[in-house]
Length: 432
Ligand code: GDP
Ligand code: IMO
Ligand code: MG
Image (cartoon, rainbow, N blue to C red):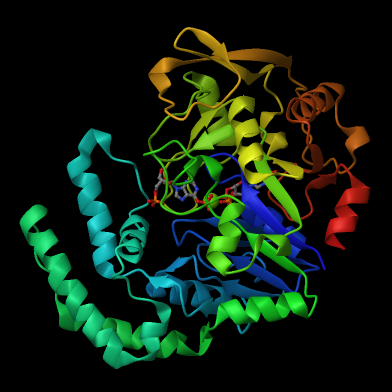
């Protein structure tokens, strides 16, 4: 059975939630493998609006088993709230599980995230303040608390004590803030342990069994390649492995289990948080796109920075991810623009280049664009490729040719049904 991976190719918020939900229909499993509740994956089904932070976007279908894998970091407070919110909306969450090996975000991680951002001042990353970086730091420092520790409160007690003593030194001496209180955190997490212990499983064996039983598995990426800790615009990145390569690291499967790598890109670019963004638009069109595309963070509600499609960055991202098929979202947002620009080359230190530099900094980069005439009409109701305006098809064809990757599907609205399946043969071969 094919196991497919969906990843974001830009700086996040490409529409992974919408597309994962759409493609979950015929899946047995949807699995998250990295990131944490820094993600915000939106799904619109008729009048219902869901924003998922930790729970995989297959949860709306009651037949889909949803696993939060070993490589994810889990904030139990946020996880429990998400479960409660879904149940209030009559979504069955009995098939949502999390890995024993996943690391747990603690209140001191959130504080350390915030304190560090504060002292960095104008050099801050613009994190989501969800404690994601500090949770991964503790994992790497071999002092993290894992979900399995919540199943053994004696161990949890000892590990928490050690961590709080350690963190209080940093909090009081470096950040000059009030120390945190062991008892309060311990009691809070004992309650969380009670609430979630029946969902904590050995996900590695569960996922391997699913493969051998020929189940259909969809891996849902969070964030995106340009936020990857190694291949993103470092240091303005998140702290996990966001590429397709992250699936194996974050779930414990070997690479040959994976079949189709599907990349999602917006028809333009956005970025929330600080850091290089070569094609950022510095005029009114930024606001027009933000308004039309409702470009506000799903997790923090911050306005997203908007820019033109950057094909140099997108090609780099497809290369690292080994993308087989592309999905382009939010094409409808560009309708009505008179001219649509696309970045095709960079001028870097005076030289024309077609690659994405490892030390990219905005001040060194000049983008060379080509201009496309707009199509200046609404396309959000169109569901056949042939019916798209001529200029719109030219834009899509240019992207496909530049990247030399087939576009499977084009999304033209936030609703589950607002799609154009461009390549029916490949689409149904992969997803039915
Ligand atoms: P994710 O993090 O990749 O899942 O993306 P987000 O959910 O954070 O942000 C994408 C936003 O765009 C959400 O509000 C979606 O409902 C919305 N969206 C997704 N696809 C489309 C589309 O094709 N057109 C429009 N107009 N909105 C879309
Ligand atoms: P989804 O899954 C967009 C950004 C933050 C910040 C940087 C580091 O919805 O696409 P962190 O809190 O991770 O330490 O912040 O990464 N960021 C995202 N931007 N979409 C996301 O997730 C993001 N998750 C983190 O804004 O710039
Ligand atoms: Mg998002």
